[in-house]
Every structure is written in structure tokens, then in C-alpha cells.
Length: 261
Image 1 (cartoon, one colour):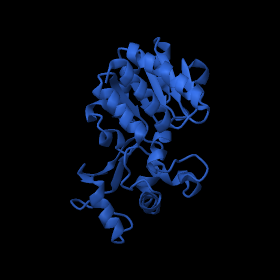
Image 2 (image 1 turned 135 degrees about the horizontal axis):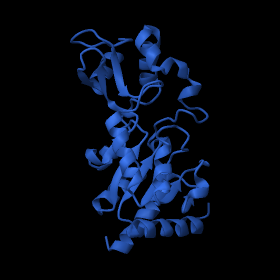
Image 3 (image 1 turned 90 degrees about the horizontal axis):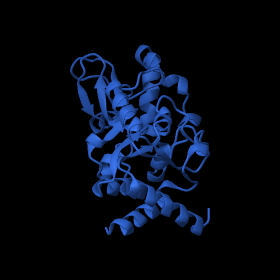
Image 4 (image 1 turned 60 degrees about the vertical axis):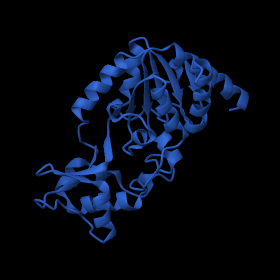
């Protein structure tokens, strides 16, 4: 995409943001990869190194070997690194400070929106958050950093220190339901926004990918910023094929100009 094309598209997105009353931003792995967090499905991603079948919830609970592989993936796969927000995260947080953001709905589990400055009560994490691990028996929660220290010391399958129950990262595994309260609120926000922005998602993982469908069906305008095609490209008011950080930095620059920020 040429510089002039990107500038022109960023201008259009900025106008949509300025004229909107309720902007919902929906993010996927494509925003996190720019912070060094590996994707799952792309070439060279997590699923080329680990078998997805080992990450089914029922297998995780019943098979100690599968639990060991899960913790190995978290230790070796790059998901537990101290990643930092990138320009796209900061641009979204700036939209909040400018009073233009209703909420962020995210498929990511990396806590980077909160680190960038979006209030936690405006971030709806459909797939959980890697910052915690929870005991499936007694419900005790542990900061992930605490568990990682145990992994670094050679513990292969950390369990609950209180009851020796199964310890599970606070993320949604295959075969596990999405958190009901979060899903309900995200659905409500999607139905009731007037601008829905998809950033860094191919929109192929359901039920998360229903969110832009709900928005468009309710009359919202749709912006998609993603490097690869999505099933909803033809329904987008503005479609940008560019990296999230570059595109959102340009969008925010034009929003600031228009609001005098």
C-alpha cells in the first residue's frame, strides 16, 4: 500500500471516529505480533511447534502429560514474555483519553491494552488473560509471574500450593466456554455501537468473530485494519491492508488534528 493511499484511508477513518458516538475496537493476534508475541496460526506460529490437540480443556484436565505440554508452550512459546504495548495499543488508549472509545473487545490474552492505558473496565477479554493462573479445585488465583518462577526452577507441572489441585492458566482452551459475563457484555456493546473497528484479526475464530457481524447488522459502520483478507472485507466502510501500528498512528494523528488535540 502506498503512502498516499494509507494517508487517504487514515483520513477517512479519522472522520468516522470523529462523527461516531460509540466506537468499539476489536483486536486480534495481528496487533500483538507487533509487540513480539507469536501468532498461533500463521507460518512459523505456535501451532507449528505444538499440537493443538494437547490444548483441549478436557485433555488438559485429564492428562498430566497434556498439562506439561501446556506449561512448556507458555515457557518456550513466547506467550509469557514481558511484552510491551506498541503504537497501535497506545493509539487505542489515546482514543479513550480523547473520549472517543466505548470499549475494546479483544481475542488476545496479553494484557497489553491495559498496559497501554485503557481502563480495565473498558477491556473485554473474550479468551481470558495470561496474567493469572487459577486452581480448578479451590479457585485460588496466582499471578503468572509467581508460577513462571516455579517453571524456571524446573517444575514441569505446577499445582496449587494450597490444595495441590490442577493449576490452569486463566485463558480459554479449546472446548472451554468463553466467560459468560464478558461475552454478554461484548455482544451488547457490539450491537449498540455506531462504529466498529477490527484491528489485527482475520475474523475466523468464533464466537468472537460474530461481534462485527452484530455491529454491522445493527447499522454500525465497519473499519478493518488487517494485513490479510477477512470474511467481512466486502462489508467494510474502510479497509486498510497495513500493519496495525503504522495505520493506527496515522489515524490518531488525524483525529488529534480534527479535535485540536
